[in-house]
Image (cartoon, rainbow, N blue to C red; front, side, top):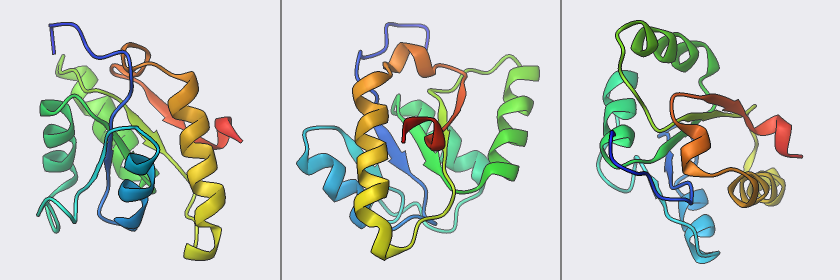
Length: 125
């Protein structure tokens, strides 16, 4: 990750979040992929973060406990990642609100600002 990162955040969406979200984000002109859609289901949290990092994508998850701990571990080890975005869980009925917050985040934060950072979607209401 030493080379320059794209200005725009690309999202890697954790398998616990509906893959439908990746399609909705992509339809609005942003790069987003779902772990489920690319065959990354049932992988470890570390594998998800490593994949997202290799693709220069911010990992989006509901799993605060495990990913905050993993981010701390990577920092101690001197490893960089392209960011982790954490959200409270949304139901399918709340998909519009989840999408609105994601788009607000994507419009306000650059990929450079996400390097080795954990952010919360609740900051983008």
